[in-house]
Length: 229
Image (cartoon, rainbow, N blue to C red; front, side, top):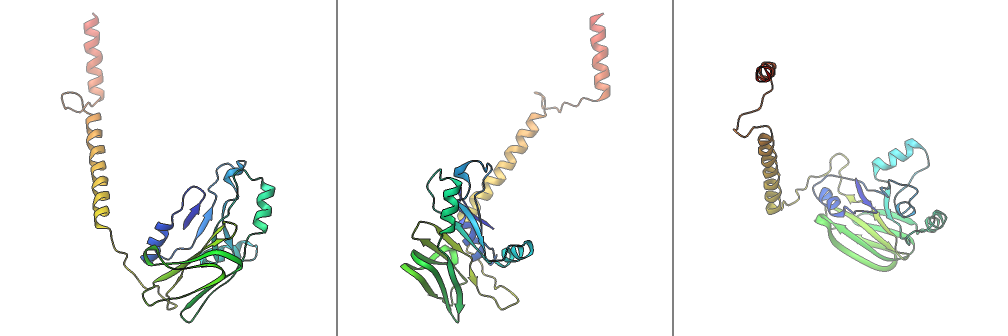
């Protein structure tokens, strides 16, 4: 799921999907349409934990062995400068679950580790450490982690979730009834408006459909010829 690009973040949609048992893994990208535009490239990316070959990369993407990254850079940095910044990025050295505890480690001090769960609710924040732990509660359906590094770069880790080896448990995400009713009303109203405008467009002022058949065209030509005579 494309969750992050330099133009828009879809964290709320990501959490909504996860909260409804729709397991999704993170993709982040520049969404650049002009690679010669310095500002548009080298800012958001997906870090893949794999060797560099096609099959391994595809397998890692499908298994969620990825990290979404929003790399901090000043506007109009040159590509050479960007390459140096990327080489010096902090490294996530460990993500593991032991018993009921999720542990995340970085190779340098981070500004913060934030653990987020069902409905996008922040469960815990740890500041100014190189590692952080979270004890997964019975009420937690999933936990994902965001790391704000010292240089301003943000890492978005894929979620850990409950799994029996066969099925992912189904969780119902509470519906916002008012918004659902509102959007459905707008949708139905828009379709009706288009329908009536379409009907009106193809009717003449007397409310009769204008149908140009071959007989009508021949009759019109004959009447025109008689008038000219």
